[in-house]
Length: 364
Image 1 (cartoon, rainbow, N blue to C red):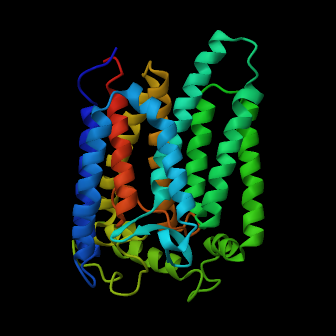
Image 2: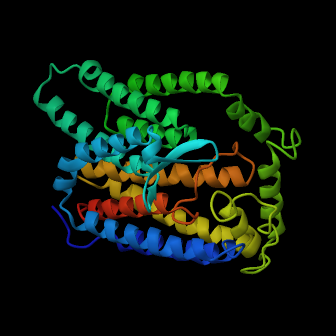
């Protein structure tokens, strides 16, 4: 039975995180120009809010039916950026679809479209298994899932975008496991992924250098470990109460990408341990409520989607903060809802719209 109202705790927590993010971005983006702040507000937050509202209002059954078309459209965009006419290259990677004034990263939207498709497909397969006892889980579920995961891996590997690929596949594997598939399927998927990661590291030495530098920050202080060392200095400089909003020193040419990848370090420097814990607490409230929506949802598709969205945001948040505190190798993963980047903000707000939609199917 569907409720008429969404989970207001999820809505309030996301609102607080986005407000927090815009506040810090205004400070981090003060270096050079405020253009980034207004771009994030007008070209990121506003379209994201509109798309999220639309996905909240659309019946969940309609979203489930449209899921294959969302993924197909996303794959077409990923194929188009293989052609120079439709792509833009930055930092040695071709990840942006560009056509005139329009520019965005299709991989960010793949996080949602892949999740919606997998949840839709697995929930329909679950219904088929109940009707047909003779169905083979390996032939009818595992192999098709492996095929679509491999396709996504190849498309993102070409760009290359290893960090986004890890988020997408990890989220997909979690949803696959929650769908009550055989345990050995999930273990095999992680095994194949681990083998693929080893091959990638062997073919791309710079990726391996990122991993080794995380365990030895003094290895190359002006090269591979420079961002890590500066991030640790930035986080440590905040102390308990921080230097004050707008008072960051590291954003003035010392810390790379202060408004995007490294914004958590700026937040820690300006608001200190207190501000960092406050932000993490709000994230934890969001995760808890989101996972409770998944746990208590009787709609199979809604349950898989909600667990997938929460896992995606949780993994991405954990990786970004882990990088900034020296616990994980340096990656280009943005901090959800906070880092500068229009594509990821729109995709995340769209996902929240879907999550709020699923929360209406929880009996209260």
